[in-house]
Length: 112
Length: 115
Image 1 (cartoon, rainbow over the protein chains, first blue to last red):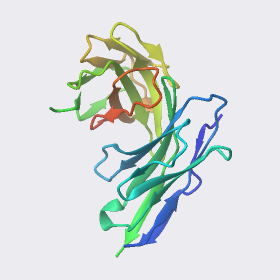
Image 2 (tube, one colour):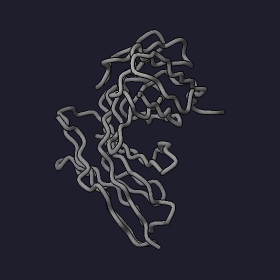
Image 3 (tube, each protein chain N blue to C red):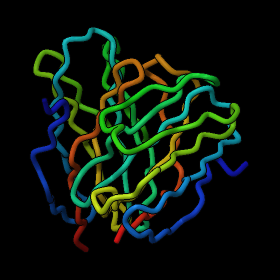
Image 4 (tube, each protein chain N blue to C red):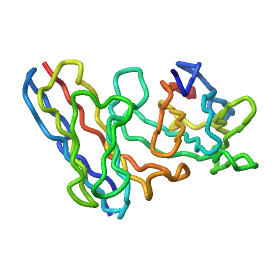
């Protein structure tokens, strides 16, 4: 069964605007972690932000914030003030103990 | 401090050939992982090693074997390569297995083509 769903294969955003990338997950565990990674065209995986299942506040890291809605099982990534360098694939992932599952990704393109 | 390194960066094999992908980390992490990434998909876990001396299957282990040589090194072996194993392979490490909050640090990947 699909554990991580990213419903937006591709997204476009104007430079300097904010964009939200959607992620929903499926788990029956109480303890889990949610991650977002960026994969530029060069191929490396870059960690962006983390949210724990017990964290009450939404995580923020610079221009990145994670909109965590536990009851809806969603963990959307918000990028504020988009930059051209934000153009990349973005993957949502969920970790339960040693099992890490990734979504299929969203390709974000930032337009000048 | 190189982080996670992988060799080789690129490899082309013929069906039935064998090869070993090497991974090493210098962050003193306990846990290491092997993933594959197919076009248009996210990463899928092949095998992981929660600590030195232990290995466990992930989501897609068939056709692969692993060895946790020591705390630093974790290798992935394809005994008889098949075209379905054409993929980009990523190695990753994290501080401790079993703790969901530990982020994973990824190597640069190995692009493998099986003809």
